Length: 486
Image (cartoon, rainbow, N blue to C red; front, side, top):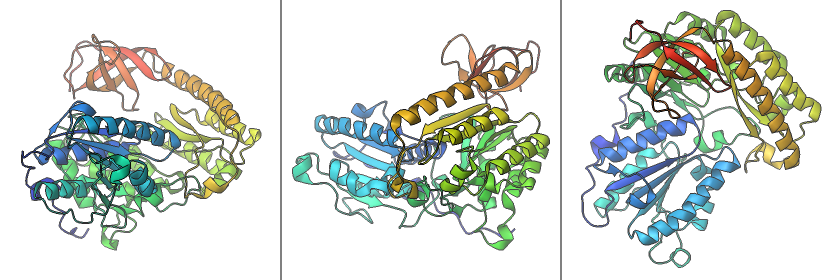
């Protein structure tokens, strides 16, 4: 494997902390929408802003800088953001000098609308340009013009105290991995590790390639070095992140193309890491060597999120998913043969344009055959700029009825899958106090199922838990007495 080029320097090491003069932000609040990648990006945003000498505020009203890290995969996150931006207008009036920043996928998809409809937004940046927010703030602190800044809000529309700055950076600029920024993690013992950004697939419904750009992979040595640093900090579980993780490394120099299976084996070899997960793979790219690596690497968990999207071959073809119903079922059979105790979860879109009732029932049938441990189910939401947005949409009532039917099926199967673990002993990574009962602890099994249990163990430890009850979403148990806490 060849030596990778020098890593980009973290923003916080190259930008001085923002001075405390009037008008310069001293506190921040980050609001996150969407997927695990956004959760990871927000941890990096908080780390970067903390590195600039800023403190984290509890809410919008207490912050000098409010950052909205957005998702635009479906319409619902858009509406949530717009409602919060309307609220931010009032907050900004009451708090003169407050800055509003919007980052993430919606910025790329609707940047013109963003500045026109919400002129009080000061700065916007795409998913690969998080580092530019630090540069923008440093420019403000030195009364300099931020590099790449472009005109933004309309003073007459927003009012003299609400005029946007505004700066904008997008995927046309140099993209940088958020992993190269400082980080402030939500959990001390679990961490996201970004291995790639962007996607080369052309799914008819998906806007990700447009808003995050083409695939770009981090070199293996950089990824392993980050995992080693995390292990030294006490992290015990890492989740490898990418829009399409199992196509990782295809555009790297030939000497570095060890394949995703090779990357799993390299991360598995890092001392101190107890659990390795990844999300999300594409079924069309799920190779035998990856299944073998999952089966053979002790740290790689018996859990896989495998997006189905539809159980109809015709609909899958219309979606441009590049696999059939039959191929998906064959893949699941192969995975279960190699990893018998694996827990499978999935994504399913209900009501794709042209989907018939019979085709929807094919999706239900696949769920019953595969028996997923969980599923994220969504009503089709047309996204401007995608191929599917131009297709005739189904009535909302039809889509809603199908969604409710599917949710019932999925929950019933998940409950049965979880009930099968009653009476077993599961290894649980302790995450803290239960959210529903302060007298219990909360953690996750290797299959990524949440367990609430009676016991006494520090956060970040591995304990054995005897399972006594199950629902469609969680397990209930008690810590095994006299079993070692690891």
